[in-house]
Image 1: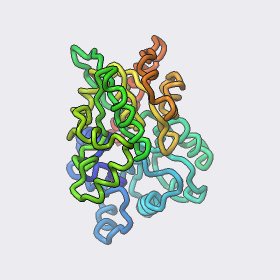
Image 2 (image 1 turned 135 degrees about the vertical axis):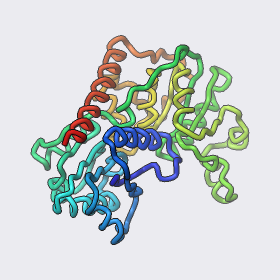
Image 3 (image 1 turned 90 degrees about the horizontal axis):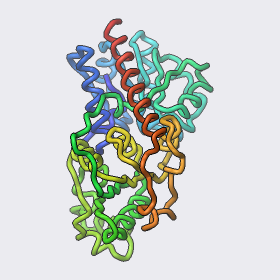
Image 4 (image 1 turned 30 degrees about the horizontal axis):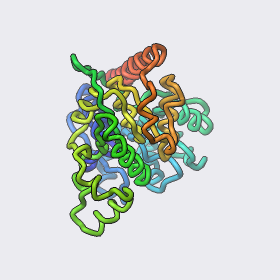
Length: 330
């Protein structure tokens, strides 16, 4: 059973990639049937309780949800803990963990494995679990990505943010440099409703956030909507710079070795990733930096950064191989 399944409707490319990798790892384990419980579940039915009692393993996908003391996060942990206490192995993996109540220790302490996806989250978890916490890179990075033969390009890729206002800032930035460099704005969401919602009021509210030139922007050919993470990865690989505000966009830049800069997110996840990989912290930029000057700077990875990326990806992939291989042996 996989709890906090985030790829509910195939809408978010990062969630698509994590989901794909989880399924590949489970397939290698020889798993024949998996029950996926969506993120945000508020009511755990009697049927789910009965199913949980009969599974060999409960995986909690910790991406994105477990920060700021969210109710849906506690409900998920509480549900899993019930079955951990009844002998079902529970792994809390890929965990972003930030600003949560100390009282949640009563759930976490019942789990067989707790694996943070960054060192900041590991530190927060160790404060309540006495150092019994492992750490590795995000599951989206857990399986090797094969670079194409010709991956060099001159295009600037701009993607969005979990924040609508920052998404608007990034879109305006992309539109403003359209005559200075080849640029493409691609939201990390596979929904044609992202900008062109079918509901007039919804569409109007979105457009109002994009500034005075919104009518021009909505018709701009550089605004591209895609359907899956692989198409996004292909564009990312052929870009010379990626400007974003999304954690998984940064992960995709690491996989494709594409130089990037990023706005911060709604948690420490991007800052923590840059710290753990060993990248220049100046790759975190402010909204004030979104100007033509940004693309005139050289954001190429230094030799040290490139080595650190390769080391981090290899370590992440080896770690998850070991984790799931050990699960198969037991």
